[in-house]
Length: 203
Image (cartoon, rainbow, N blue to C red; front, side, top):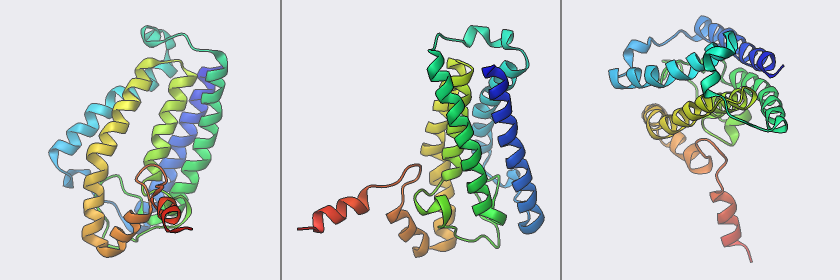
């Protein structure tokens, strides 16, 4: 059952992403991935192939990935399913908020707008949050340490490599507006700095 649930969540998220990205390309154009650095492109491939490949292989034929399975309580797999449902709602919210700004690269579009509403009010990269949560949910539903491992690798790569490069592009385009936005939000989770400042300035 969890295999079919994982397939439903994965398929729904891919369909949502494809539809919203098609709309964004139709309205705001697209940036070719070839404009990114060769190192970044190679890094994406090195992480994406085992991560997506592992998910697809497990969904197509669980026997192919039986070696990557581990014992996990059924209630934890149910948590994975609940997380997957929340991810589909979250991704739809993020993508609809981004609108024509959706891009497959770290580069900014010519008519790129600075989005600070919806989930972007709290975190600067909610799309990455949703992507990581998606693969965590699938890894739990399928009880696959391989998927969870590569999800952790992807999260580290996003935080250490992709986000700094993307934010450098955004600072170059929006300047102090983006730097101000950075100061009051977290990259992948809400910042506590504003709350800390409030406590320090209180009685």
